[in-house]
Image 1 (cartoon, protein in one colour):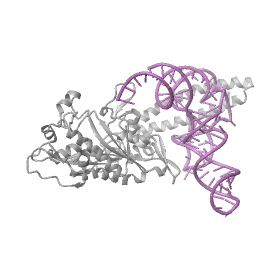
Image 2 (cartoon, rainbow, N blue to C red):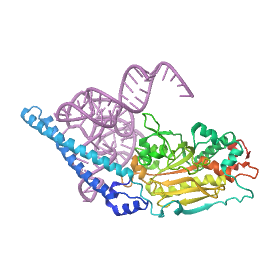
Image 3 (cartoon, protein in one colour):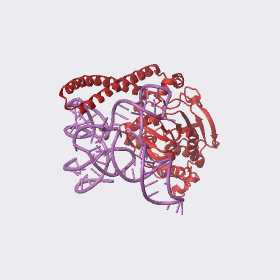
Length: 424
RNA sequence: GGAGAGGUGGCUGAGUGGCUGAAAGCGCUCCCCUGCUAAGGGAGUAUACGUUUAUAGCGUAUCGAGGGUUCGAAUCCCUCCCUCUCCGCCA
């Protein structure tokens, strides 16, 4: 959510910035509604003030019957007025709120203009894509030939966009999770959390997934208002919802491994083969809660933390800065990390690291006590994958494949798979 | 699922219809006193919105949430949510 004060005080900048995302937003209406709301509120406050004063007087002059009945009739009038004003105010407020929830975050000035993915800016490249002296296979063929992937059975059980791994792949998959958690907690100083995979809509509203992107989510069909999380960013960031943190508690660095569930509505035909795009996948998620002045340093740190996993695994990747049109709703600035996939002869997203500034914090009332100003101010929140486990597995299969169809396991994982060095 | 108890400020905990945004204690901050330490004295210490040059002042709202009774609700009534205890069931 944007700062309502900023919308009215700095409307030209806000309008220009929102336009960079390539969408139309009705600022004028919001500003008009907001000014109506404030006017109405102060009228209402005045009425309430009068009411409070009158009822205090009645309390003091309880015995004088004449004054009493006069006051009481005045009170009835007042109450009638109050009801009307309250009704109006509620209506206005919910209208306004709907607008506020609908606006995406303002983009940081360093974000390049652009309409789509093709206009993202390459920031750095790490590693050399391996040169193969044989025909490379994609992860699906590799896994199926080794008998360790089973998409048909997955489809039987759950339909399309699900996977079944077995044996060495199941173990490698688990090992990756363990490895990522260990690196981030031990070397990068994240605090590990175990969190719910089912969350209330309020939590999703806090991160910006609701109300706008309900179609991307799986909702539990019960009376409980539960959704499956699309990412651990949701429960992790909501750890600080409705709190006021002391300045010495910041920065906070959270990590959790969770399954992630996405409906992938609207992605029909995209990545239908294999396990690039699944309804369910595992992810290790990083979240930072920081003071505003530190958030852009934190974004660099977070991104490098995610990159460190790929470096250790020896997987070539690049970092791109998302352009205005490709940046997500809650983000002010996002770096995607893309890993090299030999079968596709290109880089594919494996992590997305975003600074949401105060956007999520304002929605979830996550604040800190700024001792300099004596004020409670909104924290900045950041999140990034560290990494998407399924896609990491894909990258390992493809980049470490050998001519005979077997897979070499990266050395850093050996301790996690009983020193196994080759699959197949 | 059955039975019961309860949700008040950073914490503990008073408060059953009227200057109660809320006693008291603890904690915390500042000041005073004391040679250090300990003890003591005083002041302050929720959040949001509106108004405002103002982190001054003023107004309003908030005692789990919503609704109702009343001139007036933390206090009475209803609904819901949550927590705890015991029993059952289950991972």
